[in-house]
Length: 569
Image (cartoon, rainbow, N blue to C red; front, side):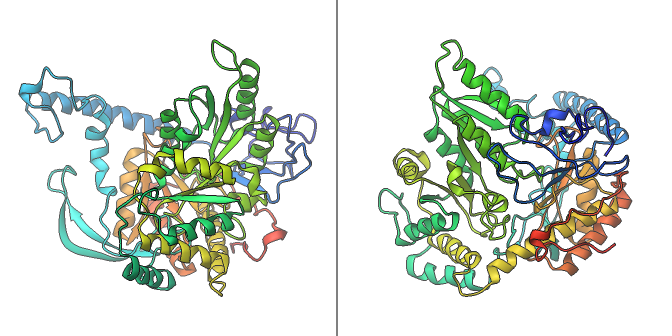
C-alpha cells in the first residue's frame, strides 16, 4: 500500500486508513472510540488491505482480524470506461432519432398515437439506458434454468433474432454448468437428501398452499415451530417469519419508524431497506459505507440539533445496516456499530440476508462471526432464501418487539402464510446447521464454505485480478470496469460451461462494473480449481488482470486454523 501523509501514522501507532485511494474517512474508525494498530509498514506495490484490530471504549476487542481489500481503479480502465459510456450515449441518441422518424424499427413500449396528449405511462428518457445500453448485453441475464441451482446446473440455450429484444429457446440444454452465481452458500438448494425428503413428506400432509393469512386461518403448527427454532438459533427471545424476504424489510421498517423518527442508512444498503425507509415517512440520512466517523458525525448532529425547524428531540434514531453487502463483499463493522449505538442511545436494525448461515463458526451470522451478544442488536432481520435454500424472511429480537409487529406489520397482517414445504425446508436445514439432526453435516458445511471463500478469493488475487471485499466473505466481486467486458466475460465463461453474474451501472458506480461470484460449500476443490483456471484464461483473453500489486502473506489466524488453510504458491 502506498504511504501518503494521510495514511502514515501520526504518532507511531494511531492511524487512519485510506481505502481504494479515496478520502481517508470513507472507511475510517470512530476516533473517539477506536485505535488502529499497524502490524508492519506497507510498501509500494502491495495490495490496499485494511487490517483492523480495534478496541472499543469498553475494552472489548475485535475477536478476529478484519481484513478488506479495495484496490484503486487504474487510470486507463477508468478513462476507457467513461469513453465507452460516452460513445454508447451518443449512438443511443442517434438511434432514438432514427426511431422517431421510423427509419429504425422501435421495439420499446410506447403510447398509442391517440394517447399522445395523455400523461405518459412510459418515460422515454428514463428508459434511455435500458433500450440503448442494457439491451446490448441483455442475454447475460435472466437465463432460464431447468434443474437444481446447486454447485452445477442445467441451462436452456436461447438465441435472439432481433439483437436481444426477444429470445427464442433452441431446445438444447447446457448440462453441468458450474454455478458461481446462486446464493446457495451452504448447498441446501438440492432435490435429494433430508431437506428434500422432509419437504416432500410435509407436502403430503399439509399440501402446498395455505390460502389465508396468519391472523385468520393460515397459522399452522409448523409456522410456530419455525419461529421458536429461529429464536433459539439466533439466541434471542422471539422471532416471526414472513413469506417474502424483500417484504420483510420494506413492510416492517414502516411499522418500526414513522414521522418524527430518524433513519441512518448505509449508502450501499439493499433496495428493500431503502424502500422501507422511504415508506416509513421518517427523515432519512445516509452515512458513508461502513464508515464509523461518518455515522458518529450524523449521530452527534441528530442529538445536538434535533428535528428540522422545531429542534425537538427525535422520537427514535434507527441505524440500518447489512451483515454482508452483496455488491461489495464487505462485512459490517458490527463491534464499532454496537458501541456507537449504545453511546448515543440509538437502535440498530441489522439485515443478515447474506450473512446468516454463511458467517461465524456456528453459522449464526455476523453476530456469531464477531463473537458478540445477540441482545445488543435491537432488530435482527434475515432471509431464508440463501443459506437455507428456501424462501421468506424473519424478524427477531425481544418479545415485546415481535408482539408489536404481529399486529402492526403489513406483511404479517395482509400477506399469505408461508408454504408448508418451504417451512419444512427451513426447519430441516436449520436443525442440520445446529447439529440437532444428530450429524455434523451442517457444521461441516459452514466450515467448508469458509475454506472455499478464502481459497477462491486469494487465488483470484494471485492471478492479478482486482477483488473487492472482506477476506471471509462468500461474496467475491471481481472488477471488470468497462460495460463491453461485462458481456464479453459472461459469454466467454458460459462457452466454457461456467455460469457467472455480471453487474454494472446503475447497480454499481459507473466505472465499477464487476462480476460477482457467490461461493458455496457444495463447490469441491476440483470445481473451484476448474473455475479458477477458466477465469484466468478468460481474464487473459478479455484483458481483466488489472492489478499491479503484490500479494502479502495471509494474516495468521491461530484461533481458527481448522477452518482457514494456507494457499500453496
